[in-house]
Each structure stands twice: as structure tokens, then as C-alpha cells.
Length: 199
Image (tube, rainbow, N blue to C red; front, side):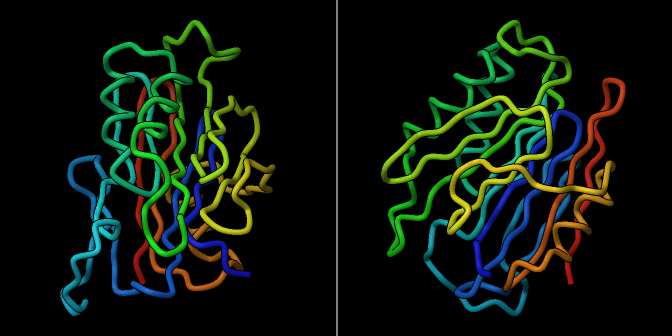
């Protein structure tokens, strides 16, 4: 099954995978804890605005993961002290679904959320998506998936890995079709670790 790009978010671990039929020549690059998705050296030039972006952004209150340019403003709002639900909802609503041929949803999550009075646990996890027909944002207590296609509502996901490298590898190896690259993040005792898989 092809679900496009997807995130899996839990309170202490999460990951993002690029799956693509149209732009497979991409990679994840670690830039001092911020993970960026972009074209490989042999990729054809394109003016598509949706193929390069930060997919993991670390803040003092949580790690933001997602499939586009909304990751940065979500991280900025977390840094400013916004409740996680608002930090997710406002950029998703403002930027809306991607204006491509498929009305591709934007997906995002927060892992290792702390210092948030609206959360029911600490650390907490949040997941969100904006589609043509809905904005969905919810707190999660177990690994939860949302994808751009097919699985475009948050749903439980069986995740075996519990560290950044393991979850990045597990999502990369998942049976969903057209894998390109993956990034993982874990929260452990106040610190974040990240990992990437490119092949």
C-alpha cells in the first residue's frame, strides 16, 4: 500500500518517513539536530516548493516532526510557550493542505513535550493533520500514525523500536511502498537524540 509521507508519534519516540513516487531522489540531512529533507545531487531540478523542508526541529519543550514548511512555525510557537495543541493547529490551519494535484495533507507531531499545562502527561506526544476536509489535533499516549494518503486520520501503530536509530530504521523498513528516507527522534531524561536513514 502507498500512503505517501507519514509520521509516527508517541510521548517519547517518533519518526518521519518520506515515501514518494514523484520525487524519489531525496535524502535526509542532519544539520546540528535539525533534520532537513532535500534533493540528492543527482536529482532533476524542479521548482516544486514541497520537496525541501525541515522535517525534525528540536526545541526546549519538544521535538517537532512533519512533512513540510509548517514544522518551523510549529517549533517557533512551542519555543514561545504556546500550548502544544495551539502550536500545532495554528500553523497547520494557516498554511493549509498542500496546493498540489492531490490536495496533499500536512502532517505533524510533537515528541517529548514538557512544560505544557494542557497535556495530560509529561513527557507528552501530540499529532496533527490538516486535510481539505478537516483539521485534526490530538494528544497521544501510544505510537500513532498519520499519513498523507490512505491513512490520513490518526490511528494506532504497532512500533517495536524505542530509540531514534531504531524507530528511523523501523519506519524506513516498513512495508508501505516507495520508501525514500526516514528520520527518528527520541526523548530521554530531558535530552533529544535524532537519527536518519538514507539508502
